[in-house]
Amino acid sequence: MKLYYTFLLSFMLLTASAQQPDTIFLKTILKVHPELFSGVMNHPTHNEVQILYTQINRDKNNVPHFTSYSYQLNANHYFYPASTVKLPTAIFALEKLHELNIPGLTMRSVMKTDSSFDGETKMAEDTSSADGLPSIENYIKNILLVSDNYAYNRLYEFVGRAEINNKLKKYGLNNTRIIGRLSVYDGGENAKHTNAIDFYNDDKLIYHQPAQYDIKDYPMHLDNMVQGKGYLDKNDKLIMKPFDFSEKNVYTIADMQSVLKRLLFPDSFPKEQQFNLKPEEYKFIYHYMSMFPGESVKPTYNRPDYYPAYCKFLFYGGDSTAVINPDIRIFNKVGDSYGYNIDNAYIVDFKHNVEFILTAVVQSNEDEIYNDNKYEYTTVCLPFMKNLGQVIYQYELNRPKKHLPDLSAFKFSY
Picture 1 (cartoon, rainbow, N blue to C red):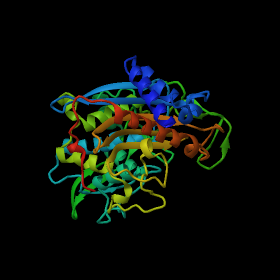
Picture 2: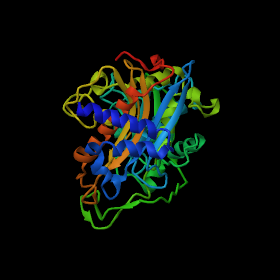
Picture 3: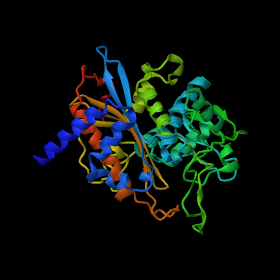
Picture 4: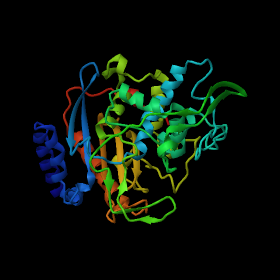
């Protein structure tokens, strides 16, 4: 009974808050659940939390209309976006295939990556694919299913740094830059160079892309780009000076959600602002974004490393024992690095006609040393993400809607 009244009070407060300016709603939702969020709320930096929650209300024609609420949203306050940059890069790789317009070149063509500059990686095989050969299709599967870094690096090299950043500007993602590979200490001149790549159908070469060099720098001067008191370098030597993020990727919460909206609801954007994707490519991305790793046959992902709810932070956290709700699908892209956990998610409950978008970041690095793999992911960050997603979901279950959504476009067989 106590739980019932607690939820009723929460619901009443939140309903009232929803009528206030958009910064009030989420602050209230955090305060009304101190048992879940007080650790973060009372932390001196609030653990760098930023949240953007978007309600979706359908009209009688099933057209979505969006209402957004934010907490500590600040495009000038830096956080490391980690693997979340992989989603726009994957989209731009598919766009580039269309723009090249080469007969026979598709996302299933064999993609062999050469190395032509210091530190670059060759890739002529891919044991995770059905035929043992690399392709854009299989790289995107690996990115969406388990956030594979090397798959992202190959697509970063294919699209090219200059084109990635031109595309970001084209779509109005002006607070974002993608300027390097992941997990290989990329930066400086190395990041400006991208590999030569050959595409084949069977044994026939159909496209050769020479090595590229991006002459541009993409300076951004944000708060919080220098953090902590020390870090381990690539040789595991402790350097006692603050860690500098000023040459790393930038991808803000608002821009993340803009990409997700544009991907999931293209008709809500002007034609010239829609991604250059075919209907089957939209479905391909939706399918693998919402698939759990254990549902994939090729690539195959086995426990314990890839537990059932792997990479679904905003509903399941990092709980390797979580029981999957069969009615709910999460279309998302996560990131985790340097103590940051990020998730950019569209959450759908087909049984109860619930849908909403939630994007959030939280960090914990109490020893203020970077690269030491001593972050409070399991005790602070992932529980926060899980609780946030669950509380918003419970609110959405009770939020009245004039028109129930038709969600069939997002329903797949797995």
